[in-house]
Image (cartoon, rainbow, N blue to C red; front, side, top):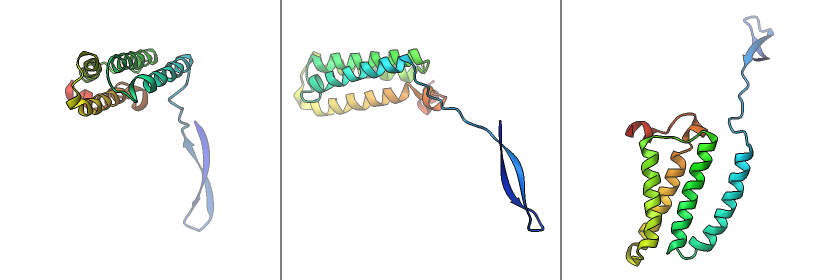
Length: 147
């Protein structure tokens, strides 16, 4: 523990310096080789997203991108030790995977916009649910509500 002094005025109006204990907090995130590899893989996934998904939102490109995204994020979080293994994280992983798979199984132009929004929101939620331990040190509320 480090000590700093602070000025306190006593009853007579004199300034006294009193030492107080100050705890230094450590940075929770420390980058390593896994972070570097994940950054490179994410860069490649971003390129695939712009080629296969962003302009078209149809066919096998969305399915392959979604699968690669899910497995890349999950592998990274397992390597970092931040994978939350509760029922909700597995549920949203499967929901996102099946939503991405639906793009290659049928076209269904009528609900294409709703399906795209659902896929995007489920991928974002799954990505926020998994690394809760890494950022907050505990699972998010949804995990302990659902078991």
